[in-house]
Length: 94
Image (cartoon, rainbow, N blue to C red; front, side, top):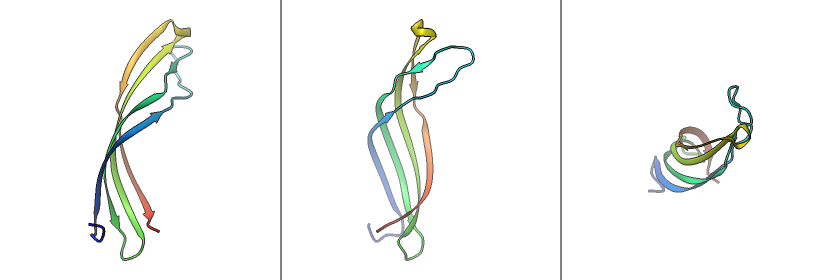
């Protein structure tokens, strides 16, 4: 309902994750492969009074697979990284 007080939403899509400057004291020359993965999202927009401003809360689940190379390619591994992101913000509808 566009005129309702609370506007929930869900979504699915694609994300691209780029890894940069990995650091490890134990393993030299570590590199991760950047790439595409899935993303799921659910959230809600809540108006602030009668004006155009609103607050937003959302939760995202990223589905990432990363290849890992270290020590000049001698060490190779694969990792499933699936972080959950929780966000809040303030917005304006124009």
